[in-house]
Image 1: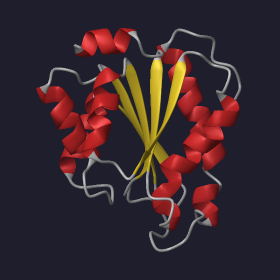
Image 2 (image 1 turned 30 degrees about the vertical axis):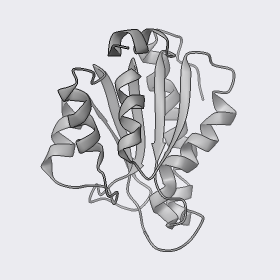
Image 3 (image 1 turned 90 degrees about the vertical axis):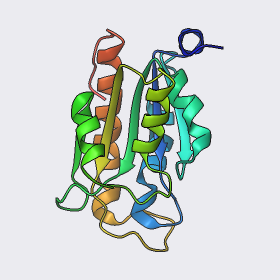
Length: 170
């Protein structure tokens, strides 16, 4: 099945949360997706994916997405819990500048594979959250946990914008 055919069968936006929930702040992407299940549960335009610790088995998810928002811990060089949204070419430049996540297989490699297959979503974004601690622990630290609600709202607003839906207060 081609990428275009796969994408036709998918919801308007795929939100992919990645991270290891056993390493405190490293699991923030997964925690945000869990929060989004409460906020976006009734929205048919949004598919939520718990991507765990990023592996090559996520390439088909990326390739099949019409529009993709990835949420992950990222080294932004800022205060813990701060976040930033990188969209399109800005995302590609951010990923290309150096390794910003703690995963064995990086988002850059997964995007490169999708690009080689001609299946990289044209609408793509990364919401990166600055971690405080990446060490054993099943919950994010206080400053990172405090960002979950804001990051969730940002992801929903971006998804609705991409789907030409009204952006309500989230």
